[in-house]
Length: 312
Image 1 (cartoon, rainbow, N blue to C red):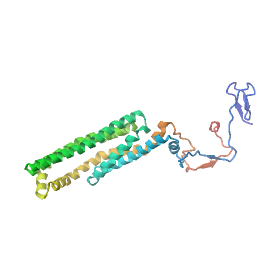
Image 2: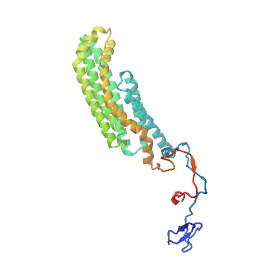
Image 3: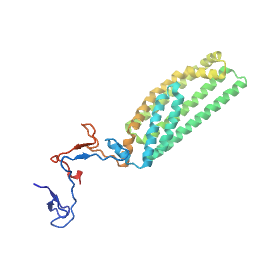
Image 4: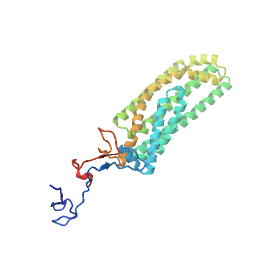
């Protein structure tokens, strides 16, 4: 039996080849059927050579949005690297540069997402960059005060202890501000679980900083006395006392693990998130075959049962 096409106006059934309804004359939509044994081609957009639907969606994005997405993903990768390396004293300086570069890239790529994300990123950018500038300026001022104290003949042990204590307390306070910026930088992109992990990491960071502050307060005077007796210059003394307390900074690895988990999750899924928000991401069996390897095309037999709407 040949297939019939129902008229959407009067409901009359017409031959598939008919262009107009034989009852009311209404124009009928032609249904295009693929010839037998002709491969069904997956649409490929310029710049996309993948069978993943998210890759096709990215290829169809506006150039500005695609550039913003690239900046955001690159920035998140740099931030993730900085989070991992930050607690390790030998890599702390490099980690700081990775974090700054990553935050700047995420800031300039913020328009790939909605207004809430843009607002969170802007405030986080102010917190993090402002915190870094304040931290640098504070370290310089404390160093100048140490030099002035030594030039006035103040006891080197007391001067070194005061300098190191003031410097680390300032760094601890600034770390609380900087990590708050890290919490809100991707806050709008996180689900409830991700936000819980972020706040857990932030709370653990404050706790670890409190432990570090207590350790420094209890030991700084004795360590300063030993360091001054071994060091020849003030810069040597600062280097030695920093080296003595450096292992305690590994405590920050605990909150860093929590931050790394959520930032990796966002980094890995940021492209899919942008595609979904853009309304370009469509999952279907052709673009995401679940039980067979991805291929460019495969034949369909005319006897296969297929939905007419696929070709309408």
